[in-house]
Length: 87
Image (cartoon, rainbow, N blue to C red; front, side, top):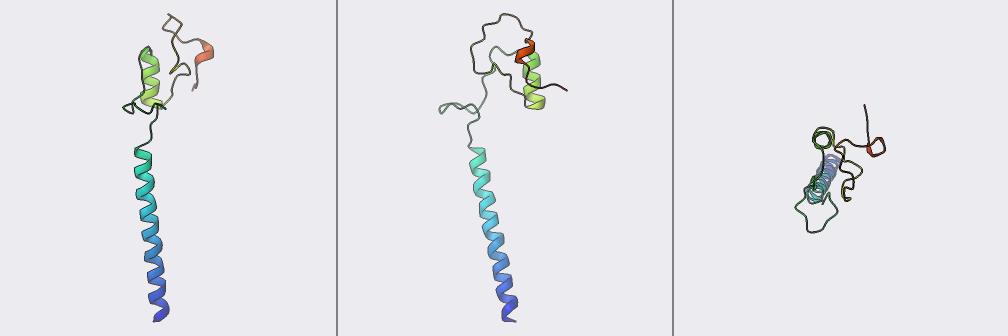
């Protein structure tokens, strides 16, 4: 009988530790700044992105390689060197 009580207590202790770890990691992941700026709102600056780049980011999570850089090209079509992924 004593062995069963110890096993049950050990099982609930492990479950409790795992639950606390999940809570901690969930909170930590929700507070991550994806842009790298400490004073940002947590959103990526999409100014200067084409409609296709915005769609690729929203649907597939693909961030253009020129994101965060000043856009020097006046063309709205990305060059073949700036494409990150393809199907």
